[in-house]
Image (cartoon, rainbow, N blue to C red; front, side, top):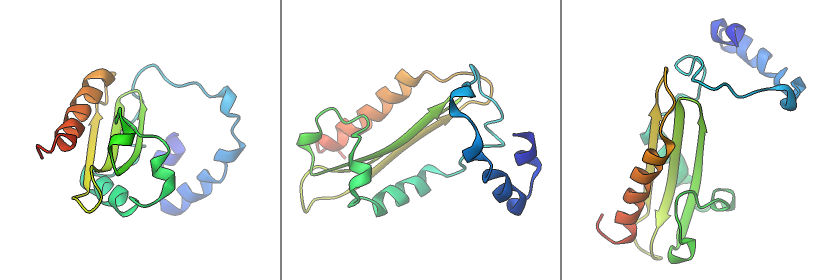
Length: 137
């Protein structure tokens, strides 16, 4: 990881070629955040909303409904998220009814020193989704 952080773009590409050689079963997830400010995906929520909106018709983002509890009540539900210690992201694309507005919702929380209360972040995101579903946004 230190080599990757210190490397330029070309060297990073070379280092990434070796990732497939790593035995995933031998890798442990750390219990606290590790260098998340140096080695992570650095996208803003605005960028994530744009990407998931552009992918709104792709079947791949519709496999997991994320935090939408009643997928059948929506015309479009797409989701991509991720987490690790100190990082959580929920990004959804949503359309309640065909020919109505399409919304992108992206919530990201980072903490370089502490674990994040994922339940609080999920609750906030679920509330935003509910506002869209109830027609209040």
